[in-house]
Amino acid sequence: MAQAYSYQYKGKQTTKQDKCKAIMPLDKVRIWLDFNEYCADAKTGEPIYLFSQADIVNDSIGNDVALYEGMEVSVFDYDLDISNKPDAILAEGIIIKNTLTYYPKVKWLIRLIAHKVYHKSKDPFVYWMSDLQ
Image (cartoon, rainbow, N blue to C red; front, side):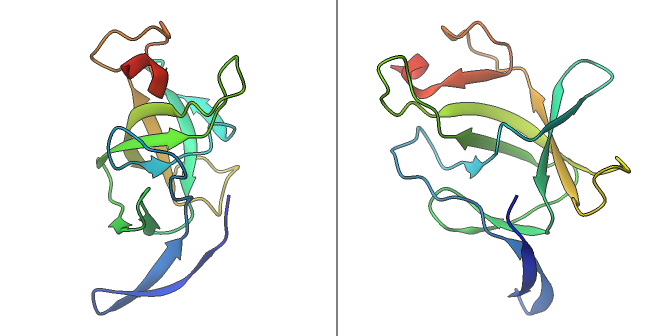
């Protein structure tokens, strides 16, 4: 997870954490999520990941995004298919405040939500760009 730093946003001093911009075409604008930063399951079974140390992150095309509790976001991470070709991992989620005491520097988490469309991955939370083709 990248370091957060002081940042001027809409006339106010806040913190920002830079996320990766997309180096491959995506289906829509998304925010990068490191799928290696899994930290818990919600009581209802949805996976929860560490998301940001700051209130501002950038999306896949470089726009600033102000995070807030309950915000719905689309996320991506880089992956390779069985032929070693880029195939982004995709998911949808809800931003939640971090209440986990063992990650005190992390301000925001993301709780993945089940996707509504059937995908070849058969995973209820995660799918790949190739699933959309």
